[in-house]
Image 1: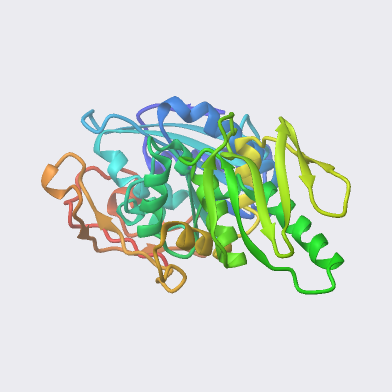
Image 2: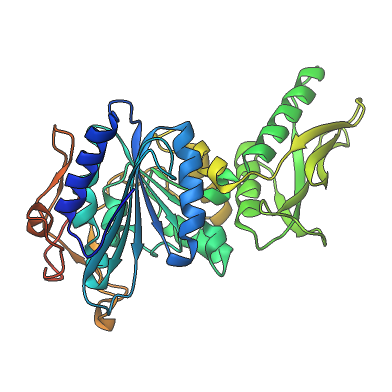
Length: 377
């Protein structure tokens, strides 16, 4: 590991190349570039999760920590090849002052060539992802409504701002529940001589949890019946669910209940009660699951649309145009100014950018608010 104090983007690129050549590391096996945006208080947790995900999906990790916007511009970086962030390459960048508002000027030259880009916020994301250039240049964007003060309000914000390629870890936390419910309904349908029909159901858990709301939306979308979220009166864990009850025709019901940590019990007609594993998964496992697929997550989009009542999510454009917002200027908050440059991926090892500050190795702190435009293609 090499620590570079008060450095430049060019120095980071050179140090990364030096460490790669010295250690004999190869980048031909990289599956993607993972951009992580984290608050300083969450850096250790974000590093641990990214290292776990990188062990499953070889990637270059670029961790961006935006510090005080009113501080003098400065860039500190840690460059690691085969260090604490896994066997691949990683750069941890702390950006002070207005440099953090132009983080793409440092990040774009560090993107691995010819591989997809995924941006993950382990911090509250902007209300409009297009106001962050690190979102615009990504093929996939991962947020986490659980980090918001009001997870349900954050879920509605994500629906308003949705574009194909977005996903949320609140949805990922429901994977095991959805798998159990799907396999249980499939088994019940196989035993029935007639098509299985659902008349309704309920989810017991935390009505304020975004995961519970998404599971309810998913069930309503797939089954075409009313599914309500009601309080269970007991701790629901990170998934927000303690039990799911589905009412079938012929006055039968299926119930999946998390009776104790790490397991669930399935109660269904005509069969003995069944115990199945339902572990609480760590942040790294959730992130690793999302990195398995880089195409738009259509089931998430449908569940989000049904849960929030927003329509037409799947038909929205897949591209975003960067909207400049200066958080230090109250007049620009909630507004946006389109910029003027595009992402330009090179054919060599590193990507290039039309930003003169990055190309020259400086820090992008002197651009006018209306100057940059980044369009993801």
